[in-house]
Amino acid sequence: MDRLTAGLQTAYDSVAEEYAQKFFHELQHKPFDRKILDRFAERVRCLGPVCDLGCGPGQVARYLHERGVDAFGVDLSPAMVQVAQRLNPGLRFEQGDMRALSAADGAWAGIAAFYSVIHTPREGAVSTFQELSRVLRPEGLLLLAFHIGTGVIHLDEWMGKPLSVDFVLFSAAEIEGYLRESGFRIEEVLQRAPYEKVEVPSRRGYVVARKE
Image 1: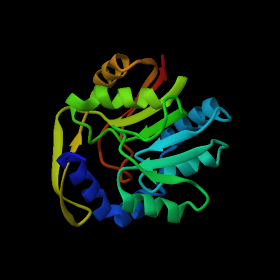
Image 2: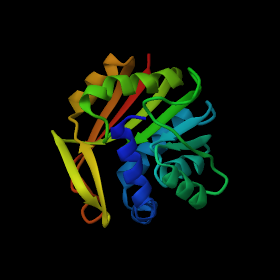
Image 3: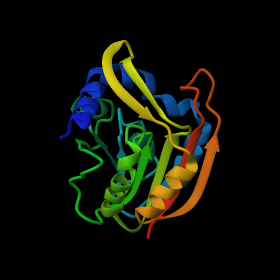
Image 4: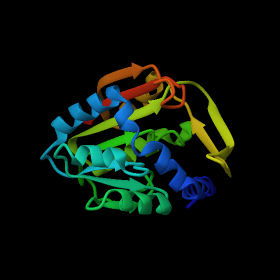
């Protein structure tokens, strides 16, 4: 594990409980996100396992599971995985690095990656998306959510904890380009304004892409 990844893991380990308190019920306040996840669930239901990648406390995996999807979660942070397991009994969660997943080639029918690429440096985006393509079945579906913008936001404190972490902002065009270069076919690109008093005030981007 390189220093950047180790630092990110440590950061999320340190805020796992606070993060879960803040975000586990967030979908209740985000009708746009629920609609997108509903549509995603309809398309991947009964096709095989679907990963909530960068699952945090597991709210997306839980939402998909409740809609009949064979959903499970993967997160870099062991502490976050423990929280997800506690909050979602009966669902499967495991520790893993999205840049080097333990799954076999073509193992998954779908991936929902909600804000899990926000710590991916631009120079590592293509290789990361290539890894996601590797573990998807032919025609497997990817639903990606991200913060729209330019540049990188660095924090030395988050949720009351001292840490060092970078948040990368992407344009929709950037994400589309990285995905195409990584072997995906873009099916849909959507954007929305932030929900006031519910989330960080950044514009949100969503891309639905299918493995070629």
